[in-house]
Image 1 (cartoon, rainbow, N blue to C red):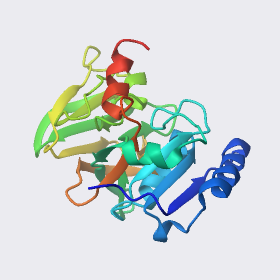
Image 2: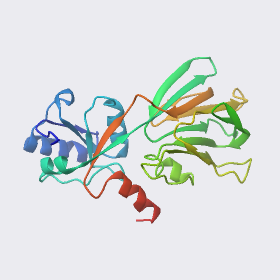
Image 3: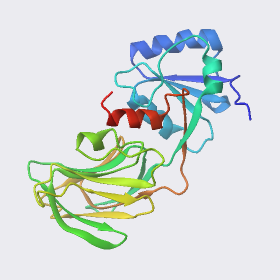
Length: 257
């Protein structure tokens, strides 16, 4: 089926370069409200792309990013010419985010989605003490660390890679469980989990050693317990130029270019 590209919505970050690009592209191709669009073009960096994917999750509107930021791992190269032809030829990738359910020290429950990762981070100078359960079985009774994260394949080259976690191919049915600056057990470097796994991370000594939980850009402070699993209902459709899709980018990262 031929992809419709008649109605394009341009959504730009606050960066001056992104705002200038939005004006230029809108003048060339027209600019409709997002709810009326066949395709949304996000202009900015990876943070803006993540925000756009969250804002339009499950709307069925594919999102094509063009880099007007810095790294731009989730973005295509910026060019004003032949945009409709690029959109028609672009390859579709569907990302399933993680579902986070966090319970704070007051007993309140908070839910959020994460396209990249769910991370837990110490809030003070004291290291966090965490218990890790996978499918209700204790796998690590006590991890002393700065934090821990669960990453999707799409997010495995982001914070996960910086924490020395593994890069996952996009089509791998896996999640990366990666410690952040582990102190004990000193040699534990994390685990690869099936994407059907349910991970529960309990904070030990939560009052003395407070920990926050972060799903992409949503942060919950002072949590006691966090449950993480791949969402069964949410989906984010992304478009990439042919030959430069997310699979290729993840593979390229493993060879350092």
